[in-house]
Every structure is written in structure tokens, then in C-alpha cells.
Length: 200
Image 1 (cartoon, one colour):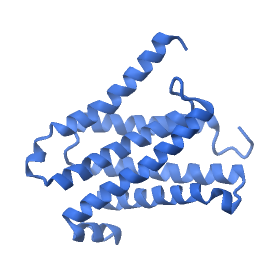
Image 2 (tube, one colour):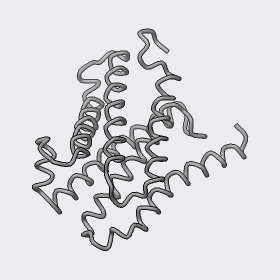
Image 3 (cartoon, helix red, strand yellow):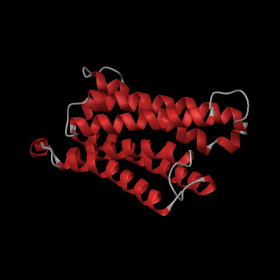
């Protein structure tokens, strides 16, 4: 890849990352929200951005971050994703514990809560599986299938969760980000043939 294309790739990624954050920061709804609630919302947006970066990293689509380097950053972003989800849920808990309890018990009247909770548990399961991978002595094929299945659940549920929420995220930038997350995940799955019984 030429230097010009590398620069363009990173510039496009920077725009994709900053536009949803900037649009959410300009939302007039912040005037009626507590700072903790606002921080929890931005943690959710950052988590969505991390979901976009993960397949780009593992697929080697980002210039200069392919192969082993990309996998290392993929693991770091995975840890950051867990932290972002934790901050998102913790912030909501601080501002409204009953709502979080209802969501965790799947008793919330808001449909987006159920999708968010499923995505949260899938993120936790993925992190736990990654940490216990060596101890469980998972075969590469088993790890690949489990990780892919959990990642699919995370992407699907997170996207539906975000799209159903009518909050501080600007609609067009939110739809664009969610679409890119899905497309990146699908492209990675196709390129790596993750469901193939044979080694790609």
C-alpha cells in the first residue's frame, strides 16, 4: 500500500471515530442529564467504536497493524472494550439503580435494554474465554468458533441496542457507525472463512 493510501485510510478512520463523538457532544439533551449519565453514554459510544476496530485489527485491514502487531492491539482493544462496557453500565447504575436491575432481570419496559444486557454478557464471556483459553486447552478451531459466535452476538445485539435508543447520539452518524461495524464483522468472517471446518 502506498503512503498516500495509508494516510487516506487513517484519515477516513479518524473521521469515522470522531464524527459520532462530536455529534453526540453537541446534543442538546446533555442540558438535562447528570454528568455521570453523560459519561456513561459516551462510554457506550466508545464501546461501539472499539467494536469497529476489532475486526479491522484482526483482519489486518489497518495499515501498519497487520499480523502479530494487529493481534496484540486487538487484545488491548478487547480489554478496553470490557472497561468501556463496565463504565457504561456502572454509570447507569449510579444514576438509576432500579432501571439497571430491571434490565439485568429482563424486566425493563424498554426493548433496547434486553439487547444491551445480552451484548454485555457476551462481552464478559468473550473476555473470560480469552483469559481461560490456555487453562482450558482449547484447540485453535474450537477457540475460533467460540470467539466468532460470541463476537457475532456482541455485534448484533450492540447494534440493535444502539439503534433502538433515542438519545444523545445523532441519528445519521449512529446509523453509519452501526452499519460499518456490521460490514467490518461480515467482511472479516468472509475473508477468514471463520465457520469453515477446514483451517483457512
